[in-house]
Length: 507
Ligand code: GLU
Image 1 (spheres, helix red, strand yellow):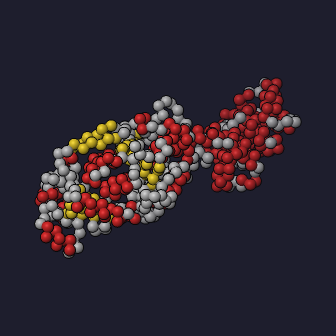
Image 2: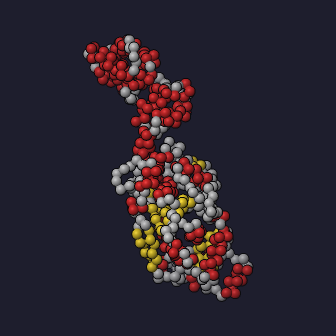
Image 3: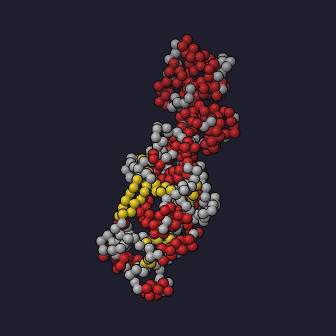
């Protein structure tokens, strides 16, 4: 019988979720939704040394912002809980015991100093079949000595007893069959008595099994652990229900040279985290996509295409479309270059899709931050101003630079343009323009344009110079949307008063 698809995103709360982790979560989500399956969020917090307060909340908030919905988790509940590993100690303890009882694992009492000594004595020392006989563990020590150590409360770790010389096959749905020989694996630590906690490997396998995970979709950095995981499944007798593995390609630096890191973001000026992160220890603030003005839909779309393609050149896809089109067959094996400019392009595209009214609402806080009271303007006015310039923006915050002249009259005029366009007789010509504008019954763009252009032609004035001088007085520089769209929105009085001011100040 086909099992119901169940996937999990299993972050460790050791800091903010990296953008690569977000992509892993997204692919899990797309795959789950497409197959009518369940998406689990499991918090892997067994490494108490690396636990960072606030990280779990951050993960939840980031996923919610992006629209990645969790079916089962700490907050959502579910019938396979608890979903936080630190609350599953009993489960791990009993599973460690199962392996010990079956002779598939053993206790090792070696102190850090003893391990260090072995490492310096033997080149490339590895705790495995070739060395374990010479170390202090329950395989090499007499049973009464082991009992004595345990009774004395000596600290120990439980190690997985790997049988050498076996070819271990990992079936990866992107990479195909990956075979490695068990001789290169070491006897990994599965549990530490010191804190009564399992290591990642044991907890991960036990939970994937108990939570009936069918597909393990995770970053490529976990591929080297996969053979060990396969062996663990077998050791527990769970080989029949072993999940399929999917190791996603790395996210690479923009130049393709090496793995994308937090430092690349700082160096090149783009966030590598979904949300802004305030480090509770250092107080350091790392920028986030949300705070930089990205729309979650744009981030999702951008990330979806870093390591997957729909098989054609479609680029803009909503979450629902992604769910429909996603397939592991079209996931690439090689790393995906993090093309930050492309990320901006997606944001640009998504902003264009938004209604002017919605954008205007998002623009209001930006206006306020720039000292403009949005309440002093009609919603319709802000909306129209937004609509006229939105084609030029990548972020909502860009609206300010592009449209500030709709809200404040220019204080200064672009000097270069003044030199180029403001000839000696320009003040007089602008004076005439005021009369032409004042003579208009209809100040709409459509009505004003032919009249003004007709006047320029009749007088034999230089079209470019006059129109640019006009623009200089109204906008302050020779940029912006269509001139008569600007004046229509500003209205006759404001336009004329700006031209007057321009004549006084420039002329
Ligand atoms: N806790 C691991 C991490 O932080 C999970 C790896 C996995 O998905 O198996 O990425």
